[in-house]
Amino acid sequence: MDYYEIDFTLPAAEDYQRDLLIDALAGLGCDTFEETETGFRAYIPSVGFNQQAIDDQLSAYKNMVDYTYQVNLVPQKNWNEAWESNFEPIEIQDQVFVRATFHQPRAEFPYEIVIDPKMAFGTGHHQTTSMMLELMLSEGFEGKQVLDMGCGTGILAIMASKLGAKQVMAIDYDPVCYDSTIENAALNNADNITALCGSKEAIPDARYDVILANINRNILLDQMASYAGVLKPDGVIFFSGFYETPDLDIIKEAAAAYGLTYTRHLTRNDWVAARFVIR
Image 1 (cartoon, rainbow, N blue to C red):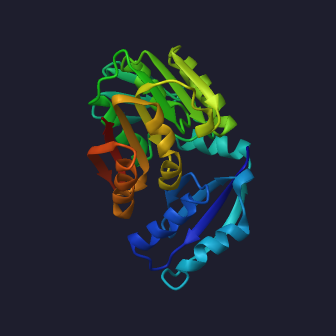
Image 2: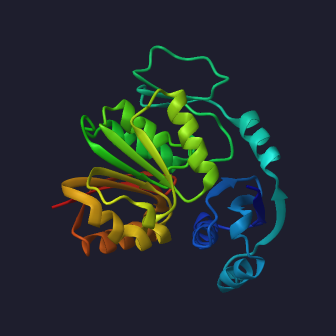
């Protein structure tokens, strides 16, 4: 699958103004963002790209933010090469070492996750993924049934497996992510991970002790009823992919309507990963 890169230039924007644009683009299907010296870049699968929809969505901010942007097509081959050239290992709390297949292992870390960095998202570098990994380290997974929604590379599903989960169901709408999850699960000998290609309609008729959902605010709001419907009593759900302001309060309010109670969250550069329980 090819991607479109939307390269924004914001000459004198404040952080909150940039975040307004990013939030609007996330609602249109952009699933990865990176800061640049002059602004930021957003990436969206070619199948979801609609120039008119982007213009319409951003028109509300024309009088609030001074910006320009240009759109470039990024073929899959070039995307994969870019991932490999820029992928560096990461460390999470001296507990987790995330590396690519072309990096050397580090035996001093209790948990090692090997990710083949193709164009599927979720390598641990983004704040939301690293915070989700941090939250998972403080949660009991032994013998649990786990659902990972928007699994990307499968990194969170693999972490759940390494933490002792009994079975992990990993779901993503992107066929590349589906394939990547299967490949990376094999690289990590995580044979208790099952991958499915789809969205909320693909969630099996089963019950889960833990749900991991690192997507974006709008998708979380749309799918929250489905998550609550398959979460066991006293089950735990981790949400990420959104901002502390104003998104966290919006997520809390929506979650409460489905019996999900907020317990705590982590924040990094205004991104949030939050823990909820159902009673």
